[in-house]
Image 1 (spheres, one colour):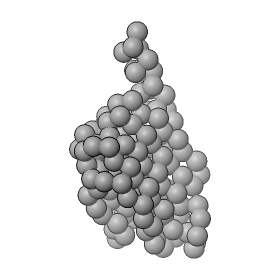
Image 2 (cartoon, rainbow, N blue to C red; image 1 turned 90 degrees about the vertical axis):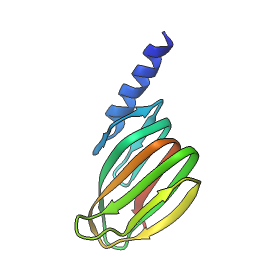
Image 3 (cartoon, rainbow, N blue to C red; image 1 turned 45 degrees about the vertical axis):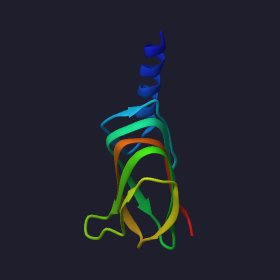
Image 4 (cartoon, rainbow, N blue to C red; image 1 turned 90 degrees about the horizontal axis):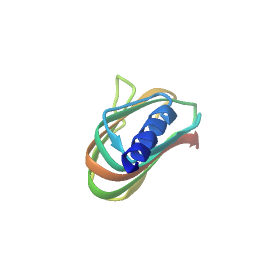
Length: 122
């Protein structure tokens, strides 16, 4: 029965990831709005991607919590990469970007924790 609950949670998390693809999230809960995306999980192994549209004057605020493992994060518009880093601890930072369409790529190396990206404020 416990495995059924875990599988149902994983399925619900997958459906909640609008504009997102992922390889493997274990025990994850994800939420998305027009200007935010967040996910809390027991383990992220592999790649997760989110496609966002940043309006004029907005920045991307990033919050990462790490219980274990490492998370590679890349924010790119296909031409430029305003952020690329390897995160193995808790981090909060802001990325200044021009208006446009961006891809947020995350690659979890058995990462346990959460992430949140907010691009709806100045």
